[in-house]
Length: 381
Image (cartoon, rainbow, N blue to C red; front, side):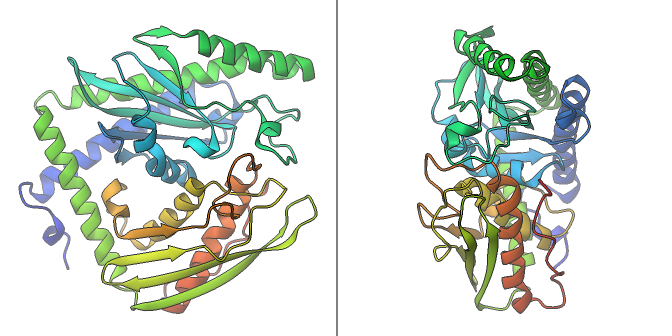
């Protein structure tokens, strides 16, 4: 099927492609602002950050080509975060709690609502890896057994209300500063404050650029364009998945060690493919472990989204609609759906890679000519 046949009614291919490119360029500019304004080499040099735009209900409709585990987990969790707050112009929400929309504690998410006059039209969001989030080891990636050992846990909180910074933000920064100075003055909170401000600035730029982009488009026109872009993404995703033969495909991988005595920890996936899409069931995976290689469900979702996004054509938009044919099944309290107070610092960077590998192994039976060998199964932490 050619590209043009997947274009939803109401928009021609050129109009929809221009809209998709323009909103992605907004995310690209957000990334450029964040990179230049940040203090930490994690952000400036390692480029461990991501930027995205969401609609008024929290559905992803644009992202830059940044970090897959960030963006997939943001797409998975954003609607729940949006529903938590009575948003106002000038608000800013921060979070890093892995069980409330985050990945691991060093990854801090900043979310700003985007308003035109008094109407909320969407959200601008960034997620960035901070060098210090208050753990007792430099880098805030300790060999931990509880989430609280990994640093300061930020449940979704209002850091700015109506344009004014809140006492909760000051308390957060004071806490980070106190923990840093108690350990090593080289890890003071001033750079952390700079990185927070850089994320806030990038979000603000994203919001302004989105409004500027829509000077000739009313609110209903924006909704129609986002809906069409999501429908287009879904159609391309379904076209890509049609190459998979129907049936059931299974695979297993092992995590070598959790650092706390558990070895050969099972990852198991069962893929069921039919005309409705793909169902990935990880229920047979091992229970969560004492060490910090556990994954919150959002991280597992991100790994799954990444694998199937790789099967889609390069021009497929990275939008919520492209995820509609995919279903994730996990078991609460397992390695891939850990529950509080499980430690998760390495789950985001090590186990997530092995989840990608086990999915590729399962797909290799369905598409042996398209699936590459597994990667090394680690991010080298």
